[in-house]
Every structure is written in C-alpha cells, then in structure tokens.
Length: 146
Image 1 (cartoon, rainbow, N blue to C red):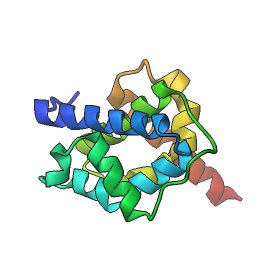
Image 2: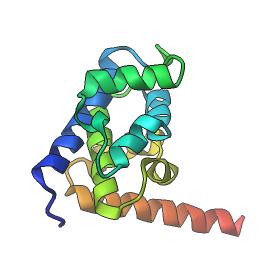
Image 3: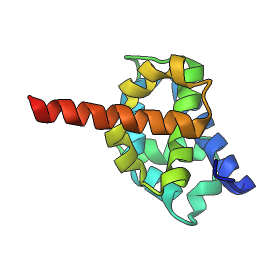
C-alpha cells in the first residue's frame, strides 16, 4: 500500500465530498461523474499543484458547472455512499497509478463504479482499484473475441 501524504488524502476526501455535493444539488450522477472525470477541473486536480486543489468542493462544483455550460439536473441518482466512494477512489487511483482522470474514467465509468460499490467499498482502496482494472482487462479480452 502506498503511503499518501496528508495533502493527497485531503484531496481524496475533497473529491469524495464533491461527488456527494453533486448528488445533494440534484445533478444526474452518471452524467456528473462523466463530465467531471473528463473536465479541466479534474485535470487541475491531477496536476502536481493547482489552485483549484484547495478551493473546496463547492467552488470546484461551480467551476465544473461553468466549464460544461450547466450540469444536468434530475435523472439517475446513486446513493451518498456510492458517490463519496467513487470520488475518493478515483482521486486515490490517480495517486496510486499516476493515470489521469480521463484515462481512469475509460477503465471504470460511473456505471461500473455504481455496480461494483457493494462488493468493493469494504476492500482496501488499492485492491478495489486493481480489481476494477482487472475487470476492464477481462472485458477488453472478451471484446477482442467478438
């Protein structure tokens, strides 16, 4: 297990709270997650240092909303637990593998995170990430057979 600094752990928590806040604000969860993971806001959090990293979840949500020209309200919702876990896990994933948010989302999209939460949320976060990557690899192998 990697030993994350306090700053990186705080950023994982901020991103988890950001995802929870999106749910509380009534945004469509899968569309929010897709928009965020492919956004400049996520890229800023992926950077070694960016002012947005310490702006807090409310400000990051406003920045994202502006960036995408308005997040979609109503639609599919996930539980608070799924949203926090997905946000936290995505940020941890970046620190664990050095992959960017956009790349991570291609491996584990919002639907996969929601489907896997029940079985994975009690795992060590690195084990959950490794398992999500393995599911992706297996799906890629199956699609090559078709």
